[in-house]
Length: 488
Image (cartoon, rainbow, N blue to C red; front, top):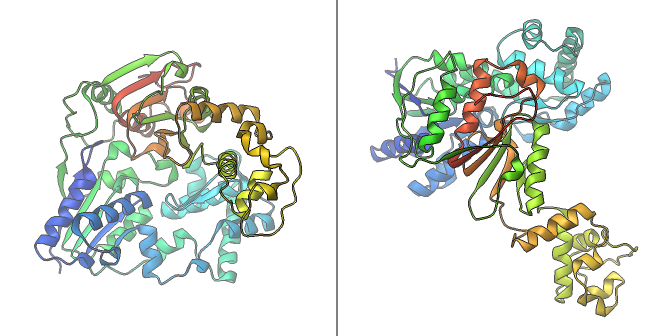
């Protein structure tokens, strides 16, 4: 029988949870534990990759010395000996949808383990996945989900079709991997990060994986558990047995933001009480009437958030009007066919050759047709343009760039924005922002209908707590335009 030490590490926002966990790794290595005997299991790829990269830099080992720094899905995939062509993809789901006459409009989120989208196929798949990760029947999940635009018959028909399709094609989905996992890891130390976001099925797998570890560290923050809609079971985290350690000092949150966040967190009824202190800097909280009042000029980082995706258009519009680059859905606003065409044209003007893909993209923005000969590279003579055209700027040549996009790109260039630089402004929903931080945070307080219907519930209060605690210095709260809003 293994004598186990289990410690639950509660990490409020910005208190250095990842650093604390890597300190455990460091202490283990110093006392002779081999890297291969340490597991670091996380909910998201971002957290697992960050831990592995920081460990490699900090301790000087290659990635293959940390074979168990993984997400739970990745660990199951590896331990089951699977190949990529044995796993369900979006194409397979679309095939099922076509056979059933239902549409998949979204994608399968590999971190969450569910389909994101509003098509009937997405909804059927989501309900089927939630039932399995919650260790409950389709019937029970259907009544828990209260999915008014989906019948129980349709959900069951989809689940049976999925089962048959996988069997006939020798495929597994991500939930199958978690269900089939049985083997304990050959490790001495097992760290489980982001534990507040795990589902019941993931907890079951984590217990199996850590069965032979003499030390188990489970880290998370129940106040930041905002993925209940995706199957996370915060009650499992709240009911964990073990020594509890609270990280008491935030290295992110200033005093005024801390005060506001503390007022919101008190609205959460089912939680661990976790006293923690802010930085000594006061910071700033400002209520503004409109997001247009925000000035994005400067070098500081920005995170602009809303509760619902459709509200993000307001934030994008505000940033674009000022002429700054931004990240949205993981992509820079200056990473586009238009900017590639501008870059290609500037190369042409400097007598630098461009590749065939770049040439094809470039001529899409000409107002005349060009037939490209097949060659390795292209210059102005190959684009049906006279030599003197090199004296014309991109606005005179690339006239098929839409007027609003042209003006936005001109503004960005006047502001010195570089097409290949990482934007310092991020625009996202609150859920997408989890784990992030910025010098300045802009938060719309308006709410959509579905989130409004959850107003007052613990998870909704947690969502707004997460939003407030992304700010390192300045927090701008945009007053609501409508009657549905979160009161801060």
